[in-house]
Length: 152
Ligand SMILES: [Cu+2]
Image (tube, rainbow, N blue to C red):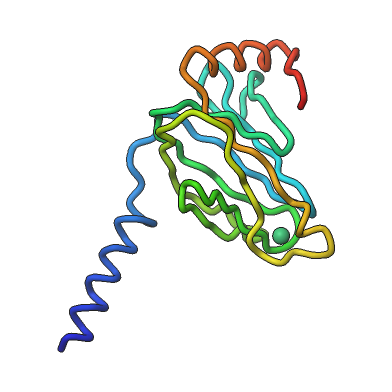
């Protein structure tokens, strides 16, 4: 009987963490490939798949205090989108769009890594997530939407 209670409670935790997404302030697309990360940010219109989308390579920009949904894709093999500081790990599976969410609360730069052995370049498949204040994020977005985004 105790096993059933534990299984039921585990399912409820899984549902609350992985299945029930809170309402998003914004959605970003994360595209993994051997051996890099591409990030598609909605531009000032806050909609993906429009002309003002901002695509970056190995660098993701988000605003502190906002809830983000992500759409995770893979162009080739299994990868795993891992942001250790968020305790976030999600497999990227070719042919599927994996959805999830996060809410950064502190500004700063943090590591993104691939947590799935994905080939000879797996070890160099790192990226950064830059959590910005609203002002910093707006400044970055205005650079990106005019095509003047500086690459690091
Ligand atoms: Cu990998």
